[in-house]
Length: 188
Ligand code: URA
Image (cartoon, rainbow, N blue to C red):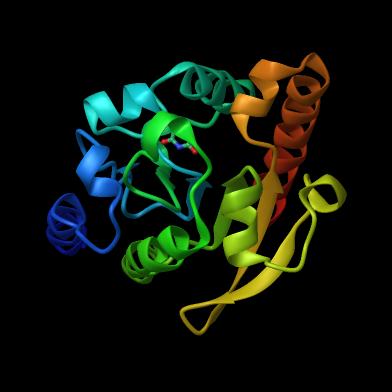
């Protein structure tokens, strides 16, 4: 499994499926425990992620670490990635053709890891799995969806970057993580 994921990440590092690789310094395939039951899916790498090739290591990543700590979940015990693997210039939102092409990789990663629960961080992560939903309505709740022909649970929360912009969103994030803790201890 490690080998399969390693091979896949090499391909992601050389991806030319959309133009984002031209302006990015590194691809950010994701990292963590390939045997985990829980995968976190964000939007796209930011500046520090682009510089290091690692997911969620900038300011939003620090908040994600705090959120994980608040429910006793170790970062190394889960897998963390994003829908888009190369940084969009100036952190603009990823465009729909970029998401469509790049999600090929996410789908493949999930077919190797086979998680039981996916926590989406922000709107773009959620929309990939639950395209008809609104994050303001379903954050902090569980939805079932088909991923690679398996029904799995999706738990959407706001993006940690939204928590850095407003104390209200930060509070919501900590509340939703408490709900996530309950869900994990009951069902996973
Ligand atoms: N935001 C994301 O959505 N993904 C990262 O890897 C970093 C910031």
